[in-house]
View 1 (cartoon, chains in turn cyan, yellow, brown, orange):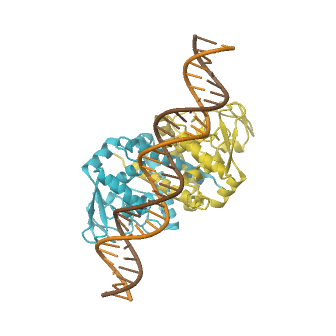
View 2 (view 1 turned 90 degrees about the vertical axis):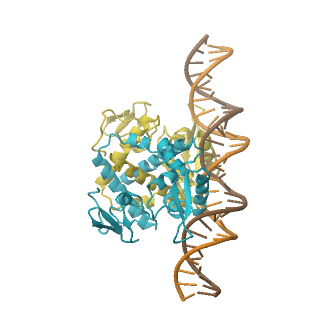
View 3 (view 1 turned 180 degrees about the vertical axis):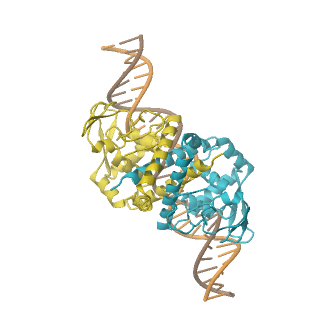
Length: 199
Length: 199
DNA sequence: CCAATCAGTATCGAATCGAAACTATATTTA
DNA sequence: TAAATATAGTTTCGATTCGATACTGATTGG
């Protein structure tokens, strides 16, 4: 019986706890709790299909009631904007305000992590990413959650030409930068094993 | 500028959130919150130097007041025992009760993770562990936290003979199994880079 | 066009958490 | 040795967070 998976779990949990503490630190000036900071970070990387309370709740593993509360607070503080979707008027769209972007820029909730990974070669990072990504995908497949990935590697991603892309599920054309944002409609592309190459 | 470190961060945070939700699920029968479950898991793997409220607080990133509360609850529920240290009577030692061990056995808070990693080769896991371990160490060195590792790779670890070990810092002899438990006195052994071989 | 479904909000109560004051030991200093 | 300081843990308090439940308004389906 191999115990390494549990060691990996322990590291993930521990680093997760540390980054949570880091988020707490980052939010202390603005009186924000870790979840609020994480929500802002999420919104800064979510694509057009994923900037809703529902997707955020799925991402953070919280119920919609709780999410609604947090968004109310962030809205009151002027850190984000909520507006109605044009097509389906039940859904609320979320967008960071300039104050929200400024906050992320100032508080740098991820800088400690960037520092901590500075000495690790890109290659080792890619390998770690690959292993964790596969873990996440399997995990989500077992329990029925959304995987949250970017276009690269997504089943619905289509390249129209050198610099033109499209989401086959939603039918929209996508800009280059948008293909690198986080999407909760992500589905892993065919094949079973995805050992090599990411990028 | 390489964005892979941030991708890695995102995966760690997301898996951490999922495991937190998993801990919530595992504790629902016994009315335990995620922290309580995490505390029990920690105690099941902490060695003799690390089974104290202080170490636990350091591990979970919570203040001692908060920890004290949680331990009170777990004690009342009969899931752990608290007893005074013989030598320093200020310190409290913690030990899982049989009910506590039974709980972990029944609730299996880690089984979803083991399932999710089932298809990942031991080698890829080892590489991921190595990268994350180094991240953790650097992180802890930057901010002044305890690294929490096992004897293998610890500066104070001494092998007396084939099957006899010793902690050079505390001066105790250690049993084989104990060298594989978690210790908050862990300090990374010399050298700077530790790319290969863990095992 | 009525029922069912869905996205999000509002309300409430239980809990978690950090801050600060406190107790009891241990250690250092004078 | 006595007094000052430091340390491990507890207690108390209040703010915040979170899930559960009931609710509103929009959409979909038969």
